Image (cartoon, rainbow, N blue to C red; front, side):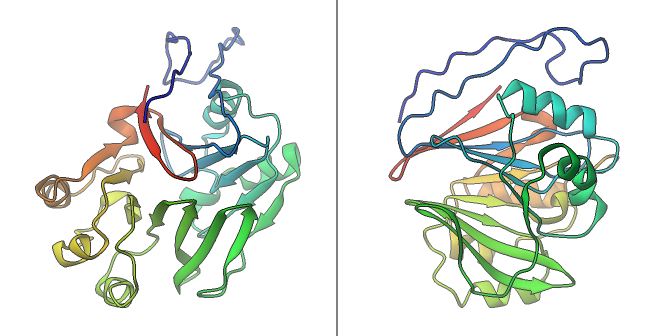
Length: 246
């Protein structure tokens, strides 16, 4: 699926402004029933924006400590003036470092209490289903139309065994748990979910497991690390999706 995406190539694109210069913006040009899933390349931690054609914006996690200025710059970049909902999958600091700022600035509805298999629908056609909850971390399925994102918050044998009993053969995108530090997911799990794309966020001072990266490449999975690719955008409608990086 091809979209025409107009944007400016920015100098110092990956670095937050410290001088207050004008920030040129990116228009995702969302049409009816389209959504952009934006994986933000913060220097530490996880944060993902969901921008819908209706104008509603959802933030999934807020990044790690000391990334507020980076997060604000990306919000400005993508025309984010409101955050309607904040969804939290963990209480670790790499996921909640900017909760206080988000709360004070945007006053979103905060969703952080989950029950396994109980579906939450923040938008029409957008289903969020917790699949595995342990130690206050939530592994979940996020589905918009035919696109399914499996958001892993755990990296161990227990979660893989449980998820392999579920019908997850339609996963398109796999968000790797724990910044790819651990040697998970294993080959059997990758065969079960069979994703086309894997996303790995950055944790300051930490690099993904080389064995894991080799395993993902061997499975013919397109692996996108925010530390290497910058901002990663999945633009989708109810039937198709496209991945862009810039």
